[in-house]
Amino acid sequence: MLNALSCDLEDYFQVQDCEGVISRDAWAAMPSRLEASTERVLALLDETGVRGTFFVLGWNAERHPELVRRIAAAGHEIASHGYEHKMIFEQTPDEFREDVTRSRALLEDLAGRPVLGYRAPTFSITERSRWAVRILAEAGYRYDSSIFPIRHDRYGIPTAPRFLHELNGATGATREDGGAGREGAGARPSAGGRPALIEFPPTTLRVFGCNVPVAGGGYLRLFPARLILAALRRVNRQRHPAILYFHPWELDPEQPRLPLRRTSRFRHYVGLHRTAAKLRRLLRNLAFSTAAAVVERWADEHAGATPPSGAGVRTNG
Image 1 (cartoon, rainbow, N blue to C red):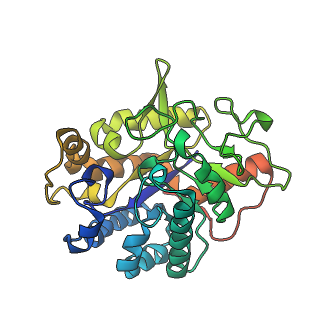
Image 2 (cartoon, one colour; image 1 turned 60 degrees about the vertical axis):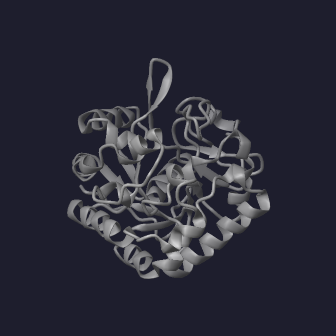
C-alpha cells in the first residue's frame, strides 16, 4: 500500500498558535529558519529514498524562490498552502479565490509544472467554509487535503469520510453516487469521467466510536512511534492509503521560544527533539510517495483514468 508524505512549508512563527503574538505585519522582520529546517527535511527524504509533497505557503515562496526550486528539482511535488496562511472562514469567497489563484500561479512559475493539490491553513475547510471546495475546483486544483474528520476547537468536520473520496465541486458535499459517503467507500466517476475534486483527509484511527488523529503535527510528536506505525499499518490493512503531515520547524528543536499561551506552547513545542527519529522510522517501514501519486492511483482504480505526467511514483522500496 502506497501512502502519501506531506510537509507544510511554514516557518516557526507562521503557525496558528502564534497568531496574536506575531502579527503578519511582523513576519518580514522575524529571523527566518525556514531554509535550514527544510534542508533537514530534504536530507531525511534523500536518506530514505522518498519523494513527498510540499504544501508551500505563497508568502514564503516569494521570499525563498530558490528553496522552492530546489524542492522541485529533487523530485518532490509542489502543492499550494495558500498565500497568507489565513483561516478560510475568516475570508470572503472573493478573497479566498484571489489567495489560491495567486499562490497557484506563483508556485507553478517556480516549479515549472502544474500545481495539483491544496491544503488549507489549519485545515480550515469546515462546515462554515464548504464553499471553498467549489472555488478550488474552479481554480483547477485536482485534490484537496483540508477536511479533518475530527472534533477540534479550531477545525474539523467529524462526520466527513475518513479516507479518499470525491467531493461535489458545486456544493462541497461528499458525492452521493457510488456510495462515496459511506465509510471507506470509493467514488464513481462523474459524468465528465474524472471527479472534479478529490479529498485526501488527514489520517485518523477509529477508536471507541471516535476518530483519533494519528499521522501528523502535534499528534506525531506526542504519540510513540510504534503506536503511529501500528495505526498506519492498520489503515493499510483496511486497504486505504494514509497521509502523513508535518512542518519543517518540527525538525528544529533549537528554534526560538515565543511567548505563547499555555495550550499553544504545548501544541507547538512538545516532542520537537523526537520528530526526525520518528519520521525516519516511519519512512523506513512503510511505502511513501507524493500525495498526487497516491491520488492518481486511487482515481485510476475508481474512475479508470490515466494519471497525468509528473505524478509518477517513487517509493523507498
